Length: 239
Ligand SMILES: Nc1ncnc2c1ncn2[C@@H]1O[C@H](COP(=O)(O)OP(=O)(O)OP(=O)(O)O)[C@@H](O)[C@H]1O
Ligand SMILES: [Mg+2]
Image (cartoon, rainbow, N blue to C red; front, side, top):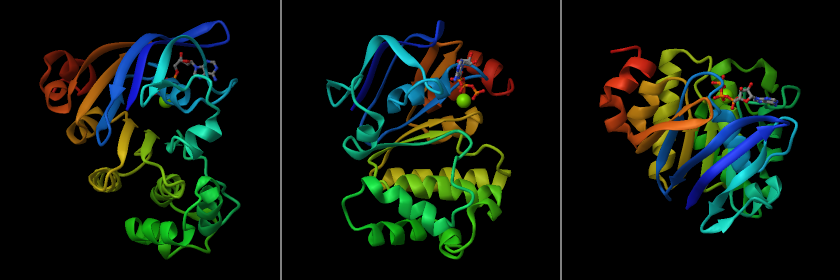
């Protein structure tokens, strides 16, 4: 479904991705792991076709979506036509708007029945349903993350990219978030998740890729990567 070949991407003159290749099949959960600055967020932003200066310019290689290059596709069409949506690093919800307003705004790209989608999101995150009229900046960190994912679901995406969805969450909420993602995946959503908690991500994912300073240095099934001595030593605290 998604096929990235020899992708190079740069911020100005600084190359952040040095020719990475990976693929994501429909219905999979794929995780990208790697240390700070490895290029994980850069990869997701390139996939979404977001523009500089926050996002990189692709200088070489290709991104194919169902076999067709999307290098010239605008970000709003990535969301609206390809139905691929990003939950960005740091959530980026509108703090001065209510939960309901954040969710409703996100249905711009959704030609369908947004009332039904709202009910779907409330079913997944009952905690949001109780807080529809609350200003979003007064939500707890965990609730804000639920809102960020809920907002993405309002765009009726079939592929969801998530950048560090468990950032700042207590362990219990981390597991809850991953259980929710697994459930959404079982309902048919394809998921690409960037995660600092490599063990958690590899446990959930069908396959994973390890990024290191702009290159993919390992790939395999979640189970294989969890067993690899090199991955254990470098990313799983040696255990
Ligand atoms: N807007 C930007 N302008 C210039 N350089 C950037 C920009 N964003 C990221 N970079 C650089 O690109 C490289 C990859 O950064 P990226 O944010 O993709 O890493 P990451 O793997 O997501 O790291 P982290 O785990 O810390 O979020 C880094 O060297 C970073 O300094
Ligand atoms: Mg990042």
